[in-house]
Length: 305
Image (tube, rainbow, N blue to C red):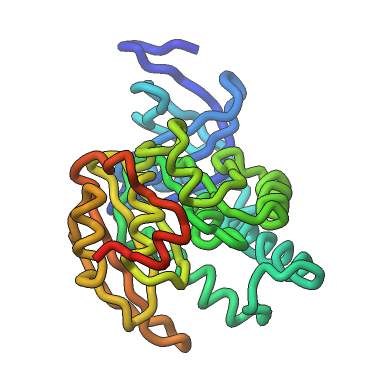
């Protein structure tokens, strides 16, 4: 019901919590008054925060909210019931369910060469999660995973950051079918799957220069991968390439300039047993000329630079 000074009082159950920025949380709250709503709880992760108890997973709380754009913001909250026995990590459960779907489907469909659970957690899930630590994305950002394969990193991003709008692009229909089914089973309303080759998808008005971030884990060399991915990125956005240790940002410098971008970062990190990885970031500074991307055969035979 409406409260004073444009505020609203609601009673709701915290269904999901996601950490964002240094001290905030994004909450999915099932309320008695307004149904399921997204709520930003600023400062909820600060030590001794007055919001901390009411923002726990599965807490039933009375909340005073105010709305800005499409988001509700938490002004104050009082927990009425914590349901401590139900406080499990739903994100981990969802990731485990995703791994189970991947493992089962991989028995009859070649989605990934990594089949062991421990290896998959590290090389797929942990590696993809690190991307969110390295690239700061605003609330509600749009992302496209180019050549997503079995859904890495895009599906992991969608699970860890439910506020993100994630597009999974792949050239094989069987992969897209698997991803559509898995997203539906996991209730991921923030995921859409598109069957298209990268060079064709980047020509579509609804995809070209529409995303805050494009990312890819493909084995293609940096000049090739940059031509495939940078046309999807809007000005001010970023292409984040997840690569092995031998790749360098310098290799993509000429391609980035021709495509309307500039190199802004090259950062190495190490996985516990899989060794060194590298994240190369290219900022979009100008529109990509219409002649790019070229046909796939030209991209591969005559890479930019």
